[in-house]
Length: 163
Image (cartoon, rainbow, N blue to C red; front, side, top):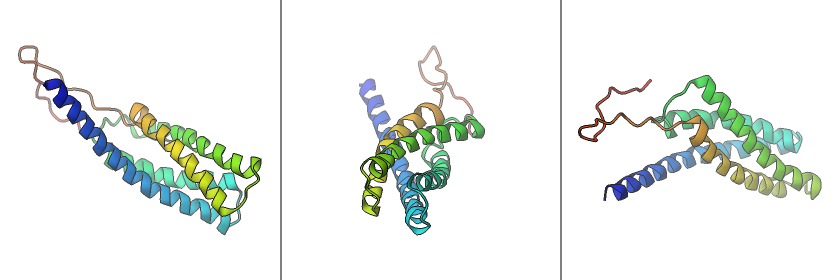
């Protein structure tokens, strides 16, 4: 019975975390798409540079939202470390999106806004799957389990390690 209760609690916690991640991601997505289209079709910049610059802007927003809201309960392993890893992993997610944009623009020869935006959305979708997995794995680390008292098997009472 204890196993089922722990599994249920873990599932509920993951759904809650995923909902917050999705909210931050949704806002970052609209920021990214708006900036990309402004750069690409408003300023006439190239398809890849537009995506790169917009992703830098939206990724900064996403880092702050995820660090201080979505994953605030997780260990803080240092702002510099987290930020560097976050942007490295975002770079991989961006590369995934750029593959779709580059294929659509340069291989298929489609230069219209609809094709560009479909390629961007599909690429961002695949990149997001990678980012969610990688952020939890390497950036926003799970808090350590508290020590267990040998006599009772219950967690020891330890002062909060919030920083």
